[in-house]
Image (cartoon, rainbow, N blue to C red):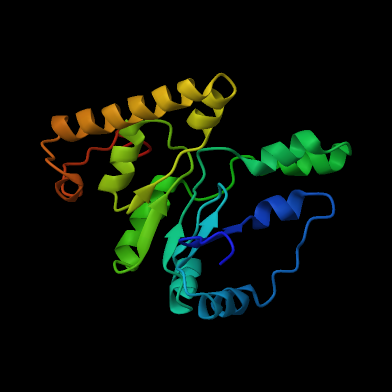
Length: 203
């Protein structure tokens, strides 16, 4: 109420906590606690992972307690396990954190899974979104909103204008992707044709 927020985002970082020295591994009753937050607020509550994705089973439990939207924040972007590895002074803990650097559900797969199993749940996409083309793919796969951090942060160390230019470029990339797929708006983009590489790893 103090800042008149339009929504509350709750970040889930179980892997980061697990590999972190002194991290919090007691997540017992978390779903019920999230439900209590939802019931106690007048604004929507969104739950977001931090780079490892959210499974259908977890998403279903979150939807059941009234979470308004889920940001899958899948694998493919920043690995907070890798960040923790670089923070570790103990070789054993560093090795363990490194071993989980690629852990998680890729953003595209998480989107496909959640959209298929929970069609009425709003799903946001972040994690490895680097361009307007990536944003177009995420929107096509069913994301309601798309977020990106690394491109903006990389530009932010330069100037505010660099951030503005990077976001303008991403917007233009999205527009061109829509043009090239014959999508006149975001609604029709959801029906644009999809092609996968032969190994199925890229869309």
